[in-house]
Amino acid sequence: MTDIANPVAELRVALAGIVGAEHVLTDPALMEQYVVDWSRRWRGDAALVVRPGSTDEVAGVLRACSARGVPVVSQGGNTGLVGGSVPAAGGDPLPVVLSTRRLDHLGNVDDLSGQVTVGAGATLGDVQRHAAAAGWHYGVDLAARDSATIGGTVATNAGGIHVVAFGMTRLQIVGIEAVLPDGSVLSHLAGMLKDNTGYDLGSLFCGSEGTLGVITAVRLRLHRPVGRTSVALIGASTYAEAIDLMSSAVDPSVRLIAAEVTDEQGMELAAQLNGVAWPLAQRHPLVVLLEVADGGDASGFMAGAESIDGRTWGLDDDADVVIGLDASEQARLWKFRESQGEAFTALGITHKLDVSVPLPSLAACAEELRAIVGAWPTMEKFGVFGHLADGNIHVEMFGPDADDLEIDLAILECVARYGGSVSAEHGVGRAKAGELHLCRSAEELAAMRAIKGAWDPQGLMNPGVVFG
Image (cartoon, rainbow, N blue to C red; front, top):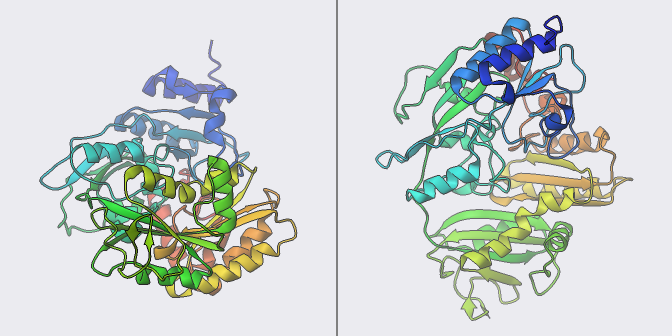
């Protein structure tokens, strides 16, 4: 018999009545994947995990938790790296982790408007394939595509590898459905591009990291496919040279789809992880990846350079470059960039920071970051890489203890000196809540807290995230 005098047991019974007993988890072994994030630096405690299968069930869960004053941590694919998708350690009362993975429906693609409505639990990869099957393209892409959920990417305003071509997640949202802490449902999914009727609630939820409510469905803008593309890996000596390659190696008449940069250490680790050889003829401090939409014949790269593998590329005669034209070649080249996170994680628990600076400051900031990180006493391996066209730098570090926050702070303070942001696309989470003041004014923080207080007066939604 259930001990209803026990608050957790009583809540479990109430939630089981809403979602079904099989979707309320209390076994620590089953809960493990929900209370530790992908980086393994952030681990917490939860009373239980609940997995609703509809918007109505989400509303019921939030009403039940709100009535009892129990915090709720909403979670999608749990691919976050800043502790924003898992509960904190301890807590009284312990929070409930609300998993949205069962909200994975994919609506019909609207060919007239180029839009689709999907559940928050649908993975990014599933949405990409769903759109492609209907002749469309979803503009957000990142390495964790088959684990990250749409709700999670909206909650963090995810960026990824194609921001230069399509923009961040916020630009893909034309409607949203979400449940507020008291169980009220906000639904605005018509997808009208012209709808000037007050506040854009979808934009408020985008980047809110679960602090305002639970996203249950999103209406997404789709794009027509860009057609065949060419991908080039090019050796570079400095970040300034890497930035210059974005313009000097790409024909101005073609569309730049992606511009990435990886350093030598990261390239080597990716090569080891995938069991492949270094891809270029020589070693370089940096390797630039450029993808252009040019029909797949490399005509998008400036003409007048030497022939490589029977093809002519628009680079200096002494350029070290390899090109991918077909899908398998391109996937091989992209693997070096997309394996960075996994390659460093294979070493052990790693510090993973995601920052951005104004593009004119990228080269100087990246070089200073390398100097700071390289001189750190406990540093063993590190990488400074990222989305070149977006001013987005990722810093991976292996060696410092998992709880060594001094190196993290040194990086964030450096970025702030260049007028940058402490989070480009991963969110603030718990990891950077104490440093948000480095890139947000007191007035901005006050405004955000006012919104949080109005929508979540009990402070139950993802406590400790963003605001600390």
